[in-house]
Length: 337
Image 1 (cartoon, rainbow, N blue to C red):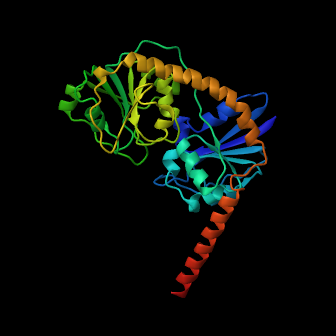
Image 2 (tube, helix red, strand yellow):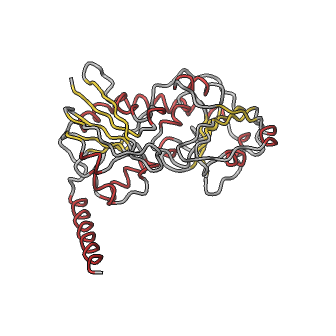
Image 3 (cartoon, one colour):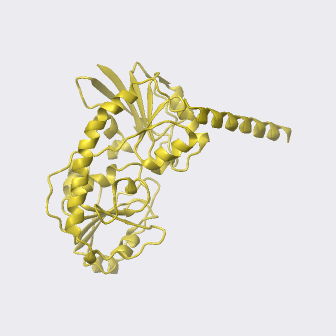
């Protein structure tokens, strides 16, 4: 029996998105036990504090999204896995990734994988698909939008579906921390038949609520991975999302979903699209994706328990030394001033 510790973003206490990886990859309770820890080290967190729990006596430690020197100093384990989220780390350079050199990295987005490759860091691409629900007929005139950030708000949705016959536009009002997206005016509420929902205590209640809608509008310009919108695709919902990672990793435009340019959103003429076909394709892509995911678990286990390290390449070691020398020169020049 192998003991595993998962350390993830404290907001994942509510969304459960961090622990999904541990549960999916190490869900065999005859082989693995998992303990969960939550990290408050994130910008804007009113409860911010340095990660102080001592993590030892584990065969494997998994870190999701948040990583820092102080965090790693509290972990006594030779086998550490890092799972970065694309939205959080898409702008990282060597200064941030340098902490991962002695770890293993699972890349849930092609965008992350390609960035790491340029730096010379090894990682294993993974593409998690959940168990699909039973396919049901969809009401494509009922729209679900989770209003999480200001950069993609209800006005974007109205632009995309300006002349579409909307029976109901439901705005889910649980915002991301430190975000206050605008709310629609009364005349907009009446015109687009807008209703509102709030946080569900149980994830199952949220997923049941999604059954009422045929179209899901992705709530953010970028996501960390595919978890949020795959929950809709696995039900046969049509996801409309920006043409950014990780959406483009899962959606083939107009085949199993719809992509658009968030920098210049234009109306999507849904009446010209065979929505039922797109819906069935979305569902089938999750069915196939789930089969591929199950097959990939053996390879993931082999990688996780191997002796590989992300930074054990000539390219990365060269870049690291150049980076460190430049840093030393800069420090020296600052002292001279």
